[in-house]
Amino acid sequence: MTDSTPARRTFLIFLCSLLAMGTWSCLFAWSAWAQDQEGSDQASPVEVNLEQVQARVSPDFQLVLPYGNLELFLHERFGTFAGAFSLDYRFLSNSVGASLSLSRPFRVITPAVRMHTRVDFENYLLPELREGDFTLVPADKYIFRERGVDLSVDVRISGRNHATAAFLVSDVYRGDLSESEVVTRGTDLAFRSTLAYDGVMQLENQGGVFLTGMHASTSLDAGFRDSFSDPVSMEHSAKLLLYRSLGRRLGTRVNVSMSYPLKLWRRDLSSFYQLGGYGSIRGYPEGELGAFRYALLTSDVQYRVIDLSADLPEIADRRLLLSRVSPYALFDLLVYQDSLDLDSQTRAALSLGGGVSVNLVEAGRRHFTIRLSLAQPLRRGYTPTLYLTVESSPFRSRGSGQTLAVE
Image 1 (cartoon, rainbow, N blue to C red):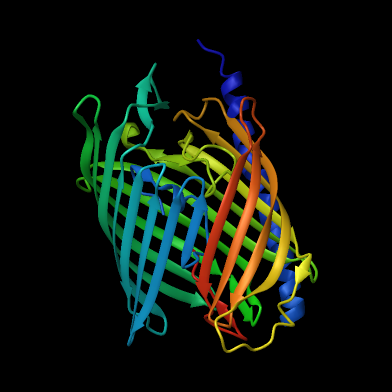
Image 2: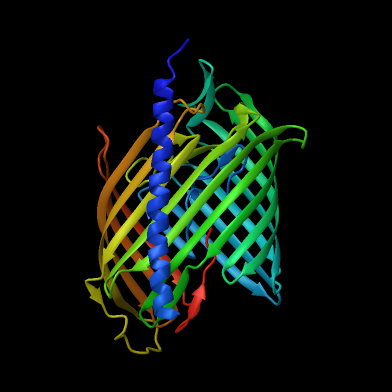
């Protein structure tokens, strides 16, 4: 009979980490909400893409170097309908994904349909059964392809609170290129229910865009393979995104996310996540850290040493003007398990760093953000990673506040 003390200890460490991160984030969010009151009175059953790990407000354009990640997001209204197109291209990771959505907002409900596809040629982590446990191990090159359709209905409950029910259908194919064999093929079916609070506001003036407020969401996914008679898993995920000004020049961004299975029927089809890189835990190679369950915190604290946003004149031409210069510090923490069993080892990854953010405006038409940052993983054998990020978005609600959709 085996000793279960290490297993219990590992499980308790993982639960305490989740509880500590969640409690800290909720207290921080509650504090921000209370101050606001005083002053103003996406997982699939088999694969979860890296960009779905954290909550985020998408710019219209983002380029991240040295990895060569390019993201485009276009949205337009067609009478009473709203359409959106997104493209995610990762040069060094050799993957590309795109989605097209159409929604029809009504007073209380918003039905929507979304079509999406992703192809990945160099996904190095593969779940394998070793010694009775599924573990994420490096694999030879293979191809992963997913395409699907999501049908959803969003219902506004009150104010900024809303609930979403969705039905997801995805055709999945994964093949080993070195062995010329099919690793998995099938159709994933999933029911997703989500409760969310959307309180991230976009405030704009002539000097650029400011984000403030909080987004919080919790989702429950029930997944099936090929038919509803073949259940795969029941999974829970949660996200929290918080922007907060701590004075006239000091500001912070906190992002907390976690995901874990509640019940598994098909261990061979359980979800796994690839983390690492600018979109998750900075400093680590992109997609290097694989996890079956995780809790992730990323945070930035910045100080605006130069802020000319209130003094910029109304300009009719298309000249670029400097608006803000903000050095910032960053801290990321990931707690995860790369084996499926709860008694497997709980690992932690941390990174520290800093950088500088420069904001430019183009005569009230667009605003640009250039970030140069350096992140150092706190793990032996890793060297610092230098990131150069360029983002651009048009002015949408100049002089007023607008609630933003958070992914």
